[in-house]
Length: 609
Ligand code: HGA
Image 1 (tube, rainbow, N blue to C red):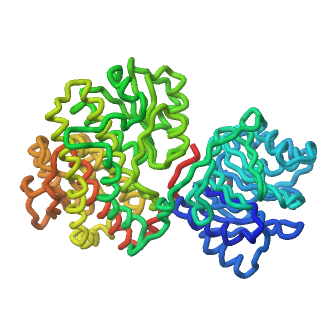
Image 2 (cartoon, helix red, strand yellow):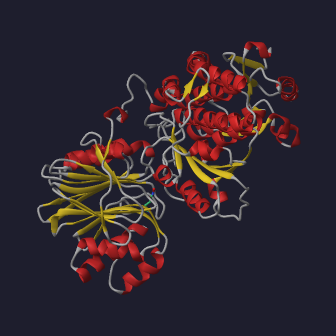
Image 3 (spheres, protein in one colour):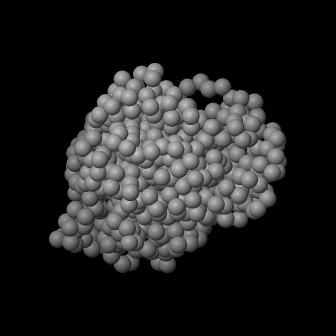
């Protein structure tokens, strides 16, 4: 969503800030801005649209100075426009960038207006800006002003504040929205994601909830939520995680689809052997509680939710453990029942998904046996706040539409299924078969990717369609849902997924020649049932696109196009069948000319509720 970058340095920082924003571009945003202390005044430039527009404006009017903050905005309060873009200013000397939502902004705005503050935007952020200005007048110290402001505002914030009357410092604060400090030599930085700062440092401090910090060129002082000075760990980040480069590919999404064999290998590395799953992979002490786990509650959003839905089938079928899966924004606002011996599992690519994080915090108060997160970003909030964590190791995912994060989440969940299954009667022979299938998985994905050219041609038939239906059965039903979500996200074609058996209970009424139907049809025990569902659709004049392995015996003709998918073990089939559906969405989007990596209205890491 929004991105923050800030710097206090000896050198001019505008280029560092712009590069940081470019690196955060993939998250999706609507406007961008930057403020640098130039001499004794603030030079602020803001533009609607891409970082490129801001860069062009700064090239025309260069800003000079070593202390500055920058922002990409994904509007929550007020339309995307120049006057609503950050940084916001108060009294021409305080500049603020902010991620999150100030929930009590209306009351604060009324009070500040009465005190004479004039508002030039509709944002909640401008309220925070004036509040900090007012408190600085009272306390005569920017750090104390920000600390006091954090006690007054409710909601979520990651924020960076500078004052042109004191160009030597920057104050930053986080609560509910991530912020990381980058340590340099004689210069310090801040960002909402370390990716923004990898060109300038590899040493990072992840701020904790409620932390406020003062950064100068030489010092970093951090204070916890009670205002006490604290030391936070310095983390060294491998430069390899710097993958903000498309390489030979036209889009990050395509690069990431093709990275999946490597990513899955990385996810499995050191975690399985020929006999089964290695012990200890979910963290010290996890195996001591696995015997007590009687139920798994999975909470996630979007694509991660679909991964959880696949896992539900797996937990109950292979591990003999009951499992419930819920969308985080629903779970957190209802009265839920905590099953005895229930493990709370959260899934999130970024580890910062606001609703999932809130659900974890709630769960921790409600008597769950323990919490585990499956996540792709080390040091993220979910990782830090869960009892156990399991890293998917997909590498930085830049494309807004999740691909490699999803397949590696599925692999991670399978390892969890096998680990729990051992205590519930999964035989060692069965476990051996499963890990053998997992070992073959990267190769199977490579084979699935070979259908790329065929799918590219097929995609042309979708370009003029307004709707599509995806069908699957069993653990392929959530894969159909994920396929439909991908198509919606990047090609803007309305797509829905149904469990194939559900078709005649309503959606079949939609079917006609303009409604393509996509079917995921591996050769499994549900195949005969699926064949019948396919015939029902054919009889109503739809064009079918069937993704199936040869043994499933679907044949292409005028009304049915069959795409061969490599034959695979039942356990890994949902992962393999994901790949052609990703390719289909990608090619349809390219043909339609949409912004594949940054589709409209979407953001990568959903850090607002
Ligand atoms: N509420 C602020 C910031 C929004 C945000 O964090 N989006 O991800 C605004 O609307 O400007």
